[in-house]
Image 1 (cartoon, rainbow, N blue to C red):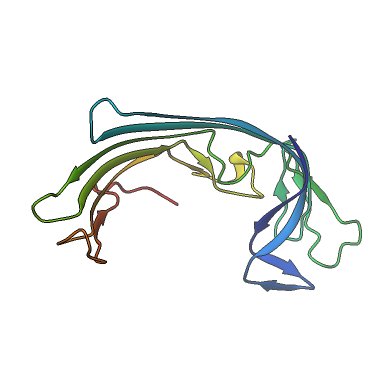
Image 2: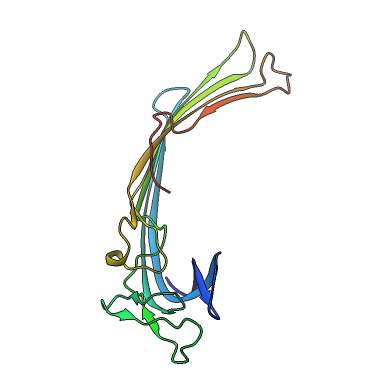
Length: 193
């Protein structure tokens, strides 16, 4: 699918001879974005549910031109350094950034969940436990810098393990009390965001 008017953000901004700290949202141009997502669920035995999903995203800028309003010349996709506009240059130097991957758009993502539902006949309600492993592919973290100009611009892929334990209608079938315990990132995985 072709998308026009793709918005992205960048900082810092340099306007009228002053540096302004903050973010700016600007229209990057045109991009092509497509993908596929597949999900599957099976129940091999009573109470047990296994679910998995996978998604693939193809995302590429078709056109991404940005006026260099920064303090320093900036490298674009041609490898050239584009002079700064810095608020005084009326020629509005433009960077071609169409080679950049779309910011924070992983190509691949997947997850797997095992869930077990146990009726609690003596205590009442249902006990529902699940364990989920989710994985995210590497991601490009900059919206306006080429890889050669910004070291460590790629955020590495990572996987997280999470768990849930729910006790619905706790203590009796007529109870309006539900209890939930959950944990995310159980393996204490450290990753950059």
